[in-house]
Amino acid sequence: MSKSTEEAVREVFAERAAPIESATDFYAGAGAVNRRRRRRQVVAAAVAAAVVAGGVPITLTAVRGGSAAPTAATPTPAKQPVRGSLAGDKALIDEAIRLLPSQGAVEPDSVQVSYAEQADGYRIVVLSGTRPDGAAVGLVAGAAPGGPLTSVAGGSGTPQSIDARLGQQYYAPQHVLTRFTIGNRSFGLALFPDGYRATIQRGPVVAADCTLDTAPATALPVPSFFPIDRTDAPAVAVYAPNATKPATSQSLQPSGNAEALPQKPPTAEIAAQIASTLRGKKSVAADLAPLQDSLVYGTGVGTLPDRYFGVWAGDLPTGRGYAVLAGIHYPSGAVVLQGDASDQQGNGFSGWLTGCFPAGSLDHTVVAARLRTAQTQIPGSPIVIVAPAAAVTAEVSFGSGAPVSVPLTEGGGFLQHGGTAGPVRALDASGHVVGTGRVDQRPIGVPLQPR
Amino acid sequence: MSDEDFREFVAARSPALLRTAFLLVGDRALAEDLVQSALAKAYRHWGRVTAAGDPEAYVRRIMVNERRSWWRRNPGREVLGPVPERGGTDEFAGLDERAAIWQAVLRLPPRTRAVLVLRYWEDLSEAQIAHILDCSVGTVKSQASRGLRKLQQAIGPDHTSLTSDRTGAE
Image (cartoon, rainbow over all chains, first blue to last red; front, side):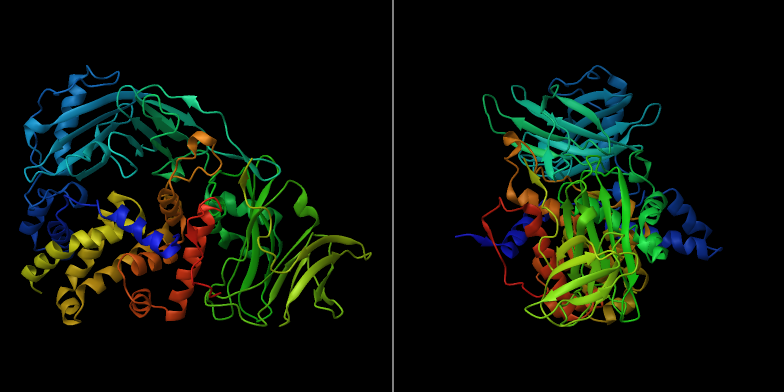
């Protein structure tokens, strides 16, 4: 028997949340935050300020029990051979061991260093240990070129699972596929037992016909630590010996300071790109930056576009709020659109379309949809019509009656009509049809599909 | 204010709050920050918080709203989970359905994700969620419906083990 989405979501939430534990002393942290706050407010609290200044590092590195500072583990030789090209860098490894208590005080004898590697001058050390209460902790320590070694990923859990607890992205014991940020750069880490193999594949490319092309998978050096650029978010698959299907596979999307990743356009630039092509109410372009991520990731693909663009925006006939259609343009020429609107009470309408249009097809397409509030579709709520720029009129068909003519401003406009709308066509000033579409056609555009 | 009360509350409830926070933000370190921030705010008004009768609901409400304000202040720092490899070749077809759902959850808008987390993880009623989010019950229903639909869309037609839900509002 198949299960409902609700049941599946419950299962996923339980699966993801259940292992989450923390070595953080939230009580001490909350107290420290407020003591620090009061210190700023009360000049006479010099003694208290001194305690805080020399006391608990707030939040992530505080240890259970609220002691004043993490207890440093005594560096000990690793029990198993350390893998990676920096396995012989004792100073680096010892420094990483000193950081391990940031995930909870560990028994010095339990420390196990698994891996030490470098890429583009960035260095990492992967290690784990066991706390006095029996819980295992893991840590990825990383350093930017010339910078100090710091904790960049970590976690705690049962000893049986700790090999896989070195980041939140894991699927099975013995395989670590995770991503993290060192400085402003994202890195992926794929660790797996000897005898296993792994492949890496760059992110999908949206072709001109809205199908998805994928680059061929290439073998990954074993084990591997690699930089991830914003646009190439690789998928990594790990295979057991002699297996043809991956035991684990995962896409590693960049994380961390997205603003520092060079491929990510700044918000102002996105707004400028949208404004440069937006027809109608151009003044709203600056407000559309929040659409940038939903446009990219709402497709389920995540491939970054080469540019963003605005299509049309206009004031709602209700007198307050506006509707807007904007999109992303892939290098192939395919585009994905998203509409959004707010109603006269200032409440958001649902986003009213997301789809992919093959290269060039938008030039003769009319996008039309009845706006819906977050609650429900309201009979008679406006139908927004966005046609090619040359269109001055749209004709909307309702059943067997005569089409309703809608004047368009810069190719867009609204119709308030409670009937069930069907086909739409747009006409230019000479009466030539310049675009066709259908109201509430679902999906509008082509769902992104693999070849 | 009673420090002892607060200490007991944190000891008893912070694990659960942390798990909820993790589902809200999708990142363990950020989740700790979120819980820490919410507890610090609650601590400042602990007397009033406990007098109101449901301190956990209060802290949860702070977390949800704090998480939304983080997103509003700097959406570029949103933690983006890995994208399901829908376009992969056969050798990548092993990505399982639950992983795809989780990645889709990470891409939901904060408010929608909060509704799903509070409904399907915390098992709160729609009225309780509406109180936390300071919105109507109808909005909660529609956000839940919209979120579930997005998850279904995100995992795509290949995942045939999922059925349509009774969430036809909209």
